[in-house]
Length: 421
Figure 1 (spheres, rainbow, N blue to C red):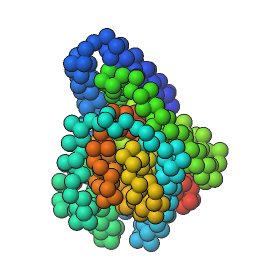
Figure 2 (figure 1 turned 90 degrees about the vertical axis):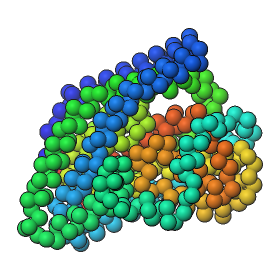
Figure 3 (figure 1 turned 180 degrees about the vertical axis):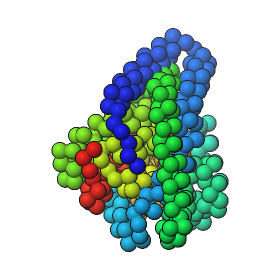
Figure 4 (figure 1 turned 45 degrees about the horizontal axis):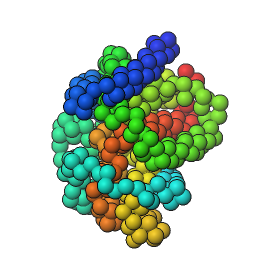
């Protein structure tokens, strides 16, 4: 799938997004400082509509683009041997990156101890109720049901990316196996992917509005003061993200050398959208475009990127151990804070329970609630960090995008399929 370059439009979109972000912060701050709580809440709810419109426009094309690109990618890879080799390399990257991210979060939270001495009276239990409903009853059975679709239509309707990936992999393998009889379907899905990617261009025009709505709503409701109240927690988490970025970029440089800078310029716009909207879904279609423009073979992009959205959420993985240990420290749960073996077991459980969470609102907190309950971490502890979760979510979502872009580029280079555009 060949995509022509449009550097001027791309740079303009990035500029508009940054302007919208700054305007959103200023407007949100003004509303927070000059109006009463009811008015601030009403403004935040209305401003969020802009973000909702943008995200829903993106969500409507997630299912067709994941299905079409992944099936075509598998079909073009040609045979099961190639699919297995590329998939194996991708999964090796994903699992290694996930373990590093989880381990880094665990190490930093034990060094900084941000939860020690935290005021546990500042809990937002009203907001925790919705998360509790999503996280209750976690079991192996629930996990399997979440991974394996009972209906591809249902999976598409609810944007269950992992379930879509499972169906698309089986469909792509079967399509390859039937040979020439499947060529019309491959051509049709290839055309569908081109059409949907053209839709992406139109939808991205709304990105600055979505960014403005998200930023102004967050600041209007919580105010900049929330950052100073939880400054230690947010600051230490972002320090962890910086360290994680350094590790990811170092490994990326080993694969890409000087082309790493070109990749970062390419994905600047998707990362800024991800940071502003705190949504990985919002940038998936745009990321597909930019990775192909960077020179990654479309077969690799179509296969690796959807897998990455289910198995390679580096920022979210680090946050899970960071947040769960923060709560354990705040409530002085020595069975966790004082037992390294329990922490390592929890880390490994997170590695499994976190799969397929892309696109789920506040998915990291849902996983923390579900998994933390197994280790005696009280659910009300999540109420401590709900108010500032949106600011942490921005950073971890942008990190997820970086991690998936690097993984796709690295596997392309690993396969000898990285071209100069």
